[in-house]
Length: 185
Image (cartoon, rainbow, N blue to C red; front, top):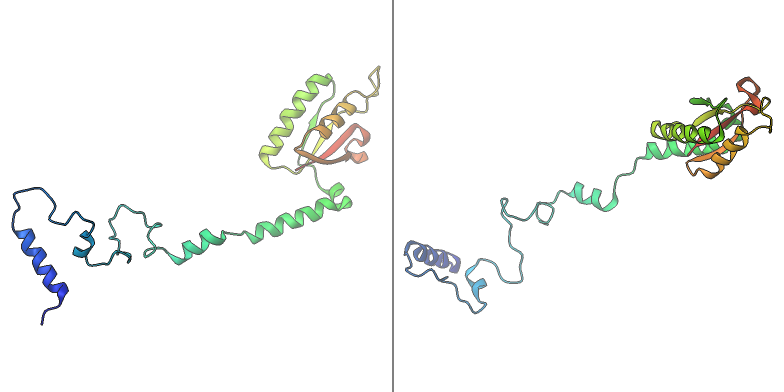
């Protein structure tokens, strides 16, 4: 005894072999075309590999690892630990003072405006290079008629720039009150 699916396939083959004279579809137009397919209207069909839908849209072809990664993301625990250790170092005052300055700029002999322009360019470059601690040499103001001009200009620049964090006077070996170290965030 033949299965209904086999009978339907034979009938479809016969219909395809006959060349219809009209270009109208042989499927009914009353919404019952699903009857001539092998699946019911409520069930999902298998999507062929070469279909227009992407692999991600197909629930049958998704890689479970990709699904998990999309849902939960990737966490770099080594980077998190490194950042945590760096924050602990920065929070410890003695450790911050002992950090080596990775770059320095000398502003001796410049006016306030020139120093501000050079300092902005210097900090921008240090941020781009990923440096953490820099030294700004501004002098003590001993040769100035009005007192230390650059020292106050550097302090106000540091306090107003959001890229910069903690700062303080350098050790006596690096210039004492004539130089300021600053941490870059």
